[in-house]
Image 1 (cartoon, rainbow, N blue to C red):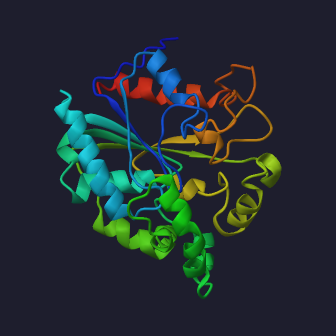
Image 2: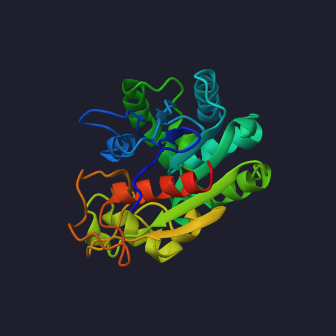
Amino acid sequence: MDDDCRTRYPLLLVHGMGFRGNADGMFSYWGRIPDTLRGRGAVLYFGHHDGFGTIESNADILKDEISSIIQDGHEKVNIIAHSRGGLEARYAATKLGCAEKIASITTICTPHRGSRTMDFVIGIPFALSIASVVVYPFAKLLGDKKPKFKECCESFGSGYMERYNFETPDDPDVQYYSYAAVMKKPLSDIFMCWQNALIRIADGPNDGLVSVESAQWGDFGGVWRSVSNRGISHMDVLDFRRKPFTTQADYDEGVYDICEAWASHVRKLKMKGL
């Protein structure tokens, strides 16, 4: 198997809501993924946008990050975005004039069509406003410059995303790819158990936050399923446990190590000349 992940254009990893996209150290958002890709020749950059910023404000930060990458001597960039980061990448390409600097956008477990479960939460009077009071100081502590928790949550609504998709069409010069993941049962991930159970009822198979249907966009690469009995959660996609699902390296049956799933897609970009 060809393990070379040296793509024509560098990779920009864009993180999702609620975290900072730090690449290294014990609390890295990306787990072993950066080391795996770097070890196979990939050139990596990371988004440094707010964990609780709006799509628009975070897209502005991504625009600056992309410009810095171009100034480093690169012609374009391949964006690989997790969760809501994919919406911010799409906004930067379509709305902020970044498309000419972006070769591809890959979204992993991104809620392109929102969530009916979040529609229910949004409908609870004052729930998000009250939660914002708690989240705001935490977001500032993380380093957010413009935290907007309520607006972040509202952007997961199905109505919001219907408008967003209409107003943010794909740019014809950018190639779009996507992947979904699924948990086999709610207890597959103790951190995602109740979310998975609720979303199953409203939206069907999901990773604990994003349904398979909502994650599909552009060239859909399929659903990531592990060879173990637990499936793959929204956190597993980021190598949260820092280890393979199993030692069984059988690609025909599913993903045995999430880092290999990421590397496989990067090799796909390389084969397409990106």
